[in-house]
Image 1 (cartoon, rainbow, N blue to C red):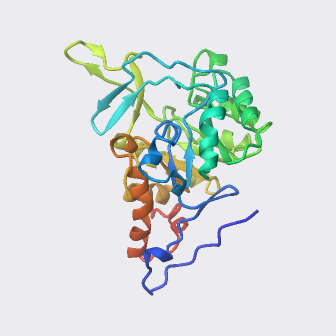
Image 2 (image 1 turned 180 degrees about the vertical axis):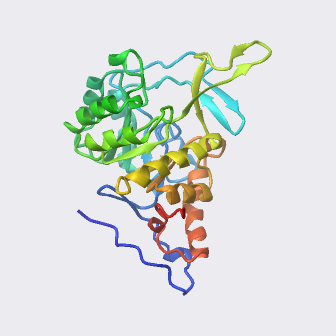
Image 3 (image 1 turned 45 degrees about the horizontal axis):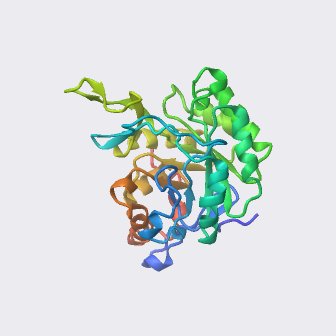
Length: 322
């Protein structure tokens, strides 16, 4: 297994942006930089490729795919909030077979490292989707979106309990040929036992956080702004929650790779996530307002590090001083 060379303390000599090493390691994967496209915000990747070459990112996390097509929830599905947005999409997607025939070939052709986000209503569905992706070129990891409702347990979230989180992960691990990252919800009393259960079940790492359950009401109509009533809050409003969750898990499981997400929009946001313990950071909601957001971070991060004499981005990981 190849590894990234261990980082050294910054020398007193000036560091130029060209000398900065952005590579990070997630399990046995070495990514060219720590900036990822978050699931659900880059569509297939082809749309964003009009703005920049998506293969310049560390990886693209695809929109969650399920075994069969899903039409999604009724509209309106999105609502703007202070410092964020609510969404209730309902995991709309064309199904794994359609993704394999339309979107997957494009990503492979363009050399984009793919982290395949998968979801299911049942534990068995997760296994079915994972089997479809088994051994495919370009797929470097699976992100198990276990924050989706569990039809096997009355509609609760798989990620709400250590036992159900572990069951999904262990089932995927029976067929997966790449590392599996469990995507966790912040809507729990204590996220640490759930991360621990996922890791014990075989997860190579965790992705956190998913959106925070929220609601907004139109005061004139007195109706919810989302047709579904409630939805997932994302954007800058949830960043402190995400930073806290990343730090909590890294503090007790420092060797567990973490993909951080939740409100990251700037170079400084990415640095903050990494200091909390994230090895990579996914950019999501910021892309809706600025399609270039993730690439601006990729281009700006070497400058930020060089100005502070930091040669290796990975030296930031877990570097918060407490």
